[in-house]
Length: 625
Image (tube, rainbow, N blue to C red):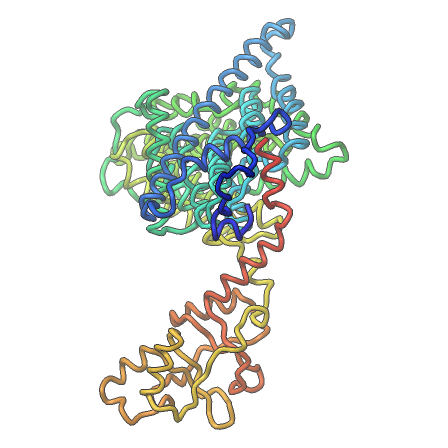
């Protein structure tokens, strides 16, 4: 539909008359594609503009619709994992029975042989753990994700996990839900802002449905994907998360992912022990992130077709899994054991810790498809249990049992790797439904994330983007702002006022232009200050007989034409102002233009649209079919 049609509506049809040919029904040659049928059905459901829903109601409705899609997507994904797990492990046991228990060595490699070509030829963005791809779409493409990603990610990740790949479910589920949210946004043709919101809604619903964690799912989307907390986004994301969780509970039962005994801390004097655990989790999380990055570089250097690399990584994972079958897949069986009664020695726990980090690095680094949340919980649980065994052995009267430290270690290590402490606390709390450990969780997670950021400023999610040249902060690519100079975005025709203009005329000009202020210039046209509506109000009734120069602000925060937009944005926040005069570096009275927040936002959007013109509607229509 053209822009003109969007604005004016369909052209009026001529009234029927004797000379008007009757309208014919579509013939066989005009058979609609499945994509067009879906679009027409959705358009038919649209509320007429005259009776449009209020904005807040519309956002809630969109959140519910996306939550249903994300929840059902999570259910279908877990169903696929069960199917492939049975096919590989049960069927593999029959097919390779002559190998005895060693047949499991082959399973991750066989899974890699399937995953590699599926991802490489059909949707390369389905490679890896998925969350960085969502963050990139939100920051750089207005939330647009190809519709096929939901299908390919479901298939590739379920094969990878089902065949024993050492990855988790949360990354794929988030990407599947996000792709569904983006698809719904594309079908309804909503704005980029709403598209980003629906992407976050889909991811939240998927996380909430699979882990029975509606609060954690919502905060995962807000903290990691959108990177901001706004009233507009909060309500629909929460509604979507609750909707997804309700679908998950209806089909999986209203039970937490892990059952934990009734334990708590020995007292407030034990909190320093959890702080120490956070300090230990931080470098361990950094090592884990660096291991995955190194594995990616290592496999990329191997001179063979990339779609064969997951099979090589899978073969190594197969050998690692011989030590303990819980190293295959998500490993929730071992986590449940750790949360009830850790029975392994410290040495055995440390061996498992190293092997899990290695197996996950090999799976993801070689091009496998799966998340890093579950492996982070596994490694953190092992580290916490080992620390708890030591602490309880040294101070039995002052410390609680090791299982409590395993629970805290899970959250602390995920916080260290993700740099998302709020999500870590809430999602682990919901996974166990144990509120009594909330204080140790907060102490350990806060300590681990602050220490991890000091040691290594990248998280397991944004390091992948940084290596591509994308620096995401608060849901935007700040590298794009760093690359563009102020001169490309500033307004050169911004109105000015002479310093001797009476305040009464300044007020009239403010009302006429609806601007909040103007640069004040001297007799030679040089910058002499800035006068705003706030300056007028501060002057009060005594402003009569005074001039713009009398009440203007003269100590200004300024920008230069060769500053980056990122520099200008920081200066705008320095004094919480909405505009900066752009001046010559050698002569600060020479006014070159004015830069505002809106100028920066507009320039940023133009830049991103220019980068991604290949993802326009034509490509989307092909993907829907």
